[in-house]
Length: 99
Image 1 (cartoon, rainbow, N blue to C red):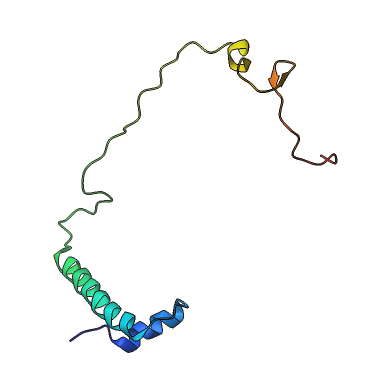
Image 2: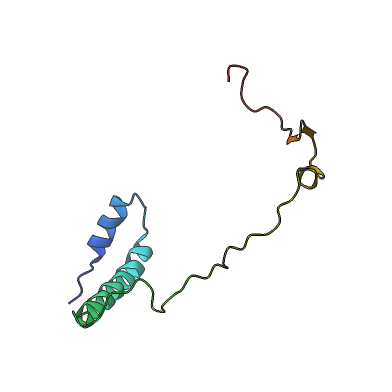
């Protein structure tokens, strides 16, 4: 027997503050019932012998190794800056004078 009823779907809609039409209630009743059934099937299969995983495929670090490389000079960094002063980027003030 189905655990999900149209009344339960309407109640969930009220809790979620979602207005559901009668057609949506009927559609969601079937969809939510299928979801609950699938979760029950997974629960049946889950045993202590099955190791819990966060991902179905083992992952390794996919980042490249850090390699020290020559740094840019200050002139190279500032060469395309729209505005600069005293060897630094100059930007428009965004805070008031009290800062």
